Length: 259
Image (cartoon, rainbow, N blue to C red):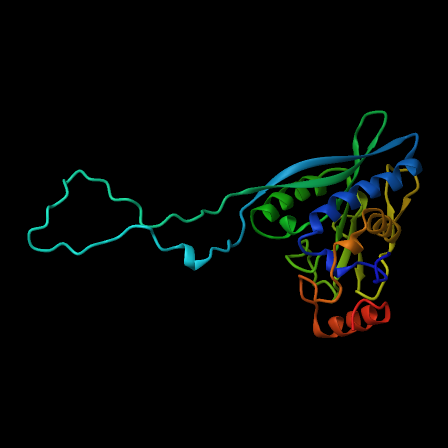
């Protein structure tokens, strides 16, 4: 069953997103590859970013130590001064988790020069240490001769830094052409809108190629079968604004997925 939404599906923004991120990046490379031959390659590259979870859930009922503590009375035998007291608690510490990130790189076949980087952003790119790592990578690209496409289909986290405020939209696509910096082309996208077809720039003298984001998203949704992983009768993990929730509820009711 296809997604009931015309564009981005907000039900995929939660715990399922990293699988969507990986599959969507791969589908973008597959869509572009035949359009780029024979001068360019579309390759997916993977790197791991270590992210420290913001919180962990620990049930308070498990925090009581299995150690009895008795009040010392008259005649009690004192423990030797060198005795080691058992730890009264054992709690889980925050452990950094390795989060995989996939980038689509368009390179020329002659010199394997990076021509365009396409980033499908994840929450790790938009918060904490992962954001700092991503901004450092982003800075290197912006200071190079490569173009940069950033696809932000997540409402949570910080947007990419811009000199001017962004419009009030749920999702964005950013295109930074090397020859136009710092000016950036921006596509604001609302929940009720399909994902736009966007141009992917290449080396000077070569025409842009078209990336149909909606086709790529629909192909991933249908081929993986995300309809089996989503419960549309409930609110999404990342809450929608009241007006968007009302619109989504009507949309889902019309598709027979919510009462």
